[in-house]
Length: 321
Ligand SMILES: [Zn+2]
Image 1 (cartoon, rainbow, N blue to C red):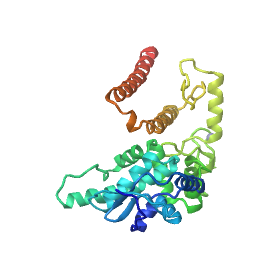
Image 2: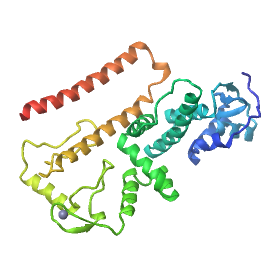
Image 3: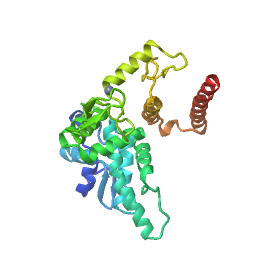
């Protein structure tokens, strides 16, 4: 379509759906449009912008013509879902922001599914069932399932100051989550299963599996770890990720009933890290590279890696028996 200074409708719901650009991002976009013009068409649905709110403002501010592309959506929810998926695919957002966007998609997915059901059409991705929800949202956001659960809790319980700090990457998801848990148990005491002392909740490591606090206090946990290091059972080796950045040291796990759960936690963290770095990289796989041959190469790398991981587990079992 020809370039012009089109007048388009702005739906505030659409406009507010997407997190605003940072000042720096906005300036970069403005500079580039002023310098080179606006080459990417704005996406429009029935005269309303669905993609390109920032470009629209900038183009009108400087009277720079732009082109538009009409797109058809079944309804408002379908349009909003498309917007969210597009943002998740291309914006440089941190895990919390990605999780937040995926949570917004949840409402629209549920509404869209309900409407399809009322219309007698087969339901789409089923987001109505308990634990599968977090899993699908995590997938959409490209973060681990545990991280997604924490984001959900933060989203519903944290105040705006905390959320803003998270969006700016000033605090970690784990820290915000820990803070919420600490508030939930403010003033409460619990008994450590190891030393038997009654201590406030803050003296216990909060759950990384979102279900429960560790049964032994931080002090006992540290002591147990120290002892395990000293009398390291050579059959218990730590976890170490050879080429990743998350490296768990070669410290034996403490000899307590919770050890397996700790192993599970550490492994889950490693796998979450694997998935989120994979997500970051795979976003760089762009349509111009997508040949059958290239896709096949990536698929076979992935399946080799998955096989190697399974083999490691099987070898470990054989070795230990
Ligand atoms: Zn204790």
